[in-house]
Image 1 (cartoon, one colour):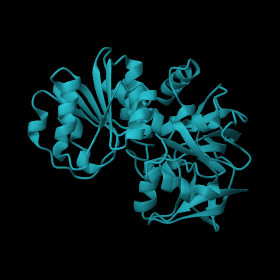
Image 2 (cartoon, rainbow, N blue to C red):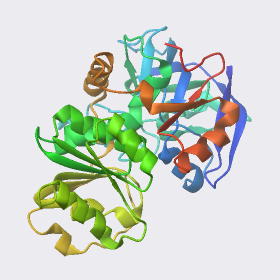
Image 3 (cartoon, helix red, strand yellow):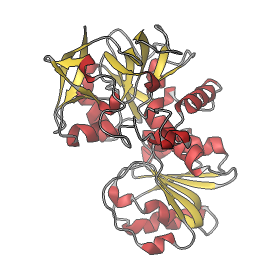
Image 4 (cartoon, helix red, strand yellow):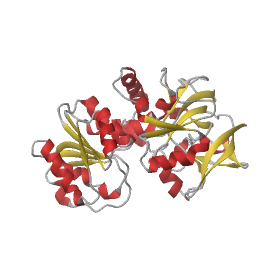
Length: 375
């Protein structure tokens, strides 16, 4: 078995850097040497709330080290992006084309460990340990199902590739795949962190004429303009029901609300905020995955407004990752610019602190022997 430095959490708010032993892939599985792993707010949430031990991380890119019996289309030496929404291809939702909400393998929509490579392949003190979202990317090596990797033929740096499989896909896909933003339309984005910036990029790609970035931090608004925002609006913490922001949006949009609004903060109190910003018959999108109970004022739905809560930008990994890489190579999608800071495994506490305090758009952990420039 291979010694692998890994970030371990007890799911009660604690993390540690330990060495686990990683075995060889079984049938239908792949051994990946992780080169870069993105940090996401969902990692922080899992560390605080899962109440079990696991290897942290669900964004990543790396190199295939070995493949198990029956694996086709993936070979040793392939450069890959990892995808946590693992499709089985056979369930009701997969056959409906909804690969991102697979009823069998998805760690969000599926059951138990169905999408997990055999758990005994990662041992911590001789006991099997789970991998976050069936991946566990904050580790030098991981065993995953073949369907959890997308092979790429690209010289994109691993640091930039690593963030595609969650933050980029969630933001961009919520705009392009889920809301299907129209050319010439108006769109608001609430929260200009990593996901919000990719909503902005998705809106620009879709041809939105007005893209309004909304945040409490003026520096983030300036950064948002570099990614395609046409306007910036500062939100005040005491702005009850987002009334002041809604007034500014109406001013920008000719006296009515925006055509689309996207919530990217994961703050439960803002769960209804996009409804306050869209016009009648507009579309409000809750991007960030709020799961707490929220009380809605039904007047916010007046009239004919649509409110949707897509998962992972309705990702079809083979289709969407390829498309995102094409856009990156033509300069139409900024990925290198999103990676504002890199860390090593020993700096994981600093990386998480920067994440939750909004100091970075996207932070990425580079594994030993690699740096941000690796491609």
